[in-house]
Image 1 (cartoon, rainbow, N blue to C red):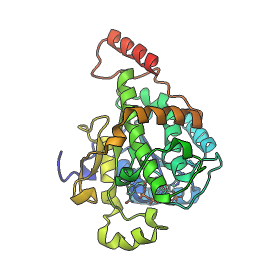
Image 2 (tube, helix red, strand yellow):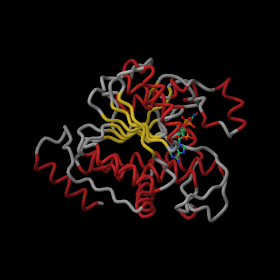
Image 3 (cartoon, rainbow, N blue to C red):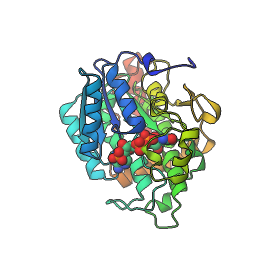
Image 4 (tube, rainbow, N blue to C red):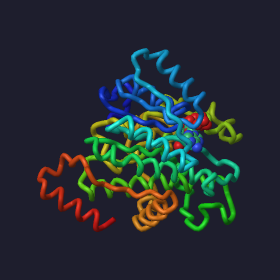
Length: 325
Ligand SMILES: NC(=O)c1ccc[n+]([C@@H]2O[C@H](COP(=O)([O-])OP(=O)(O)OC[C@H]3O[C@@H](n4cnc5c(N)ncnc54)[C@H](OP(=O)(O)O)[C@@H]3O)[C@@H](O)[C@H]2O)c1
């Protein structure tokens, strides 16, 4: 991998449709701006219309020919996720890039309108449901990618399926770690299922190291250390952009900054901990998430994978997959 990969290296995105959740701020904003600059149609999926529109105006002010729109999406509400996906499906027959970026960090305990702990609901369950709702469009688009934005903090996470509604003790950092571990378990399991179904869609994960954004706004210590430790949001977006667009990035790759402790730097392929690769845990989380979000991943009507060239092989893979699912 080129050590100095930058957003100038993004291949032409003309004709591609990209959804960026949390595209109004921080890493999401920089991701959206860079994709728009390279010609993609970008949908900023934001919970706040005013902030979303301000971001759109900023991008279009800089790039007058950019094709950028704003759609309301509150990931902490499953009804909002379903409504967003419905509107998208009505207006688009393809989806090249789904950038599951939005997130909250170390928030005080809040239970969402659906009854879940806020960080799990926003960072994992909402994106899981969104991906399921948009799967038909993703698999119908050859070479489409799903990029889930995780964190170094996945290392402190444990999946506590018996505490997703905050029935037991709440620790805000462990809850953040859990949600970011869930992002990785979801990514790797989604990639396995894409492969089993013989489709060309890819699932990848990325993390931005330590990046100065609004994420630290309510986390005093992190905010105080930003000037010393953090890189810019433009740099923080590079791993996501690399995962979303680099031709050499493979399904199942995890991309982060290449510098010391993966805190900053240009993107490179990085590793994640053993727990994130635990298949049993990934399957349990998947089954539980489908149940909680009331969604089902259907891999039908898939665009065949380039590596699977015989129809017979494709059909065999599909039937194996449906048996396995
Ligand atoms: N910054 C870092 O150092 C760092 C490190 C590791 C991982 N990450 C990950 O990077 C991602 C982006 O964070 P960031 O640093 O760019 O922070 P940010 O500037 O605070 O951006 C977060 C975005 O998520 C949106 N969001 C929050 N809750 C939402 C909800 N319920 N529905 C829809 N959108 C929602 C926010 O919307 P509002 O503007 O309306 O609040 C905002 O657009 C997150 O997944 C985070 O966990 C960041």
